[in-house]
Amino acid sequence: MPQTIAFTKGQGTGNDFVIVPDANGELDLSDAQVSALCDRRFGIGGDGILRVVRSAALSEGAATADAEWFMDYRNADGSAAEMCGNGIRVFVRYLVSAGLIALKGAAQVRIGTRAGVKTVTRADDGFEVDLGVWRPESDEVLVRAKGLPVARPAQGIDVGNPHVVVALSSIAELDGLDLTVLPVLDPVQPAGANVEFVVPADPLVQAGVGAIRMRVFERGVGETLSCGTGVAAAALAVRLWAGSAAPDRWSVDVPGGRLGVRVVRQDDGEHVLLSGPASLPFSGEITLA
Image 1: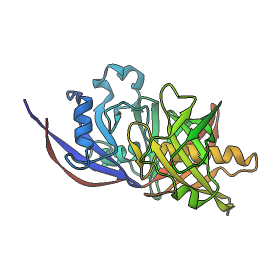
Image 2 (image 1 turned 180 degrees about the horizontal axis):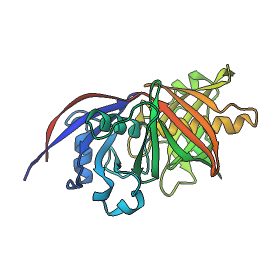
Image 3 (image 1 turned 60 degrees about the vertical axis):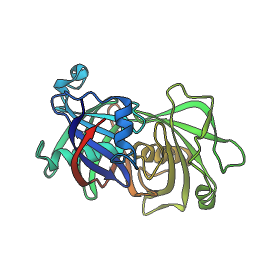
Image 4 (image 1 turned 90 degrees about the horizontal axis):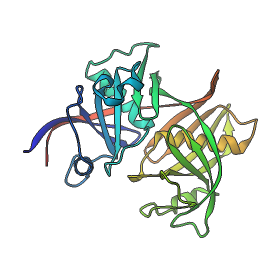
C-alpha cells in the first residue's frame, strides 16, 4: 500500500540530500525506494538520504548512547555509508530548524553515525564537525580515470570512511577529467572508496592557510559538487605530501563552493575538523512506491 512521508531538501556546497524525519524508527526504506527518492528526474533528487532517527529507536542505539540523534545516511543507490561531512552539517541544520535541538553560541551537539559519534558546533559560515582522528593508509593504490593518459598513484586517507587522493599537475588536467565514468582502483578496495582529484594552489600557503581545488567521485553516487569527508581527506593528503612545515588550516574549493579544514591535536591523536554552510531549500510530502 502506498505510503506518504514528509521530507525536506537540504544541501551543503551543492552536495544535496533528501532528509526524512523518522524519530521513532518506524520507516524501513528499501534500496529501490532510496534510489527513487534521489532520482533527479522522477523523484526529489539528491546525492543521498538523511534519515533523522533517535538513537534509542535503533538496534545500534547502545553504541550511540551519548547521542540523542542518529544520522542514518545512505547513498543515492541505497547503499549505507559510514559518514558524510556535508550531510552531518545539513542534518544539524534540520534539527535546529525543526526545533528538535537548540544550538546557540559555543554549544555542541553530538550526532550518532556509523563511524561513531561526531561533535558539531556553529561556525562563522555555518557549522563545524569534528570528524575525529584521521589515519593515512600505507598501501599504494593506482587510479585510472577517463581523461588521464596513465594511471596515477593515490594516497589513502581514512576519516571514518575510505578515500584515495590523487594529485594532478594543473587546473586544465582537473577540468579535463570525465567523471561520468567510474575511476578504476588497483588494487580494488574491498569496501570501495571515494576518489578525490586535487590541484594545489600556487603558492600553496598564504597567510598560514593552505589552498587546493578538488573534484570527487563518490562511491554509490558518482561525481558530486562537493564531498565533505573528501574535502578533509584531500587537505590531509596534500598536508602529508607537503611535510612537517605544512599548515593546519586549509581552504578547499569544490565545484559547489568552499569549505574549511583544520587539524587540531588532542590526547588521542590529530583530529580533522570540517566547516561550511548548510541550507534547507524546501520541504514537502511524497508518496513512496
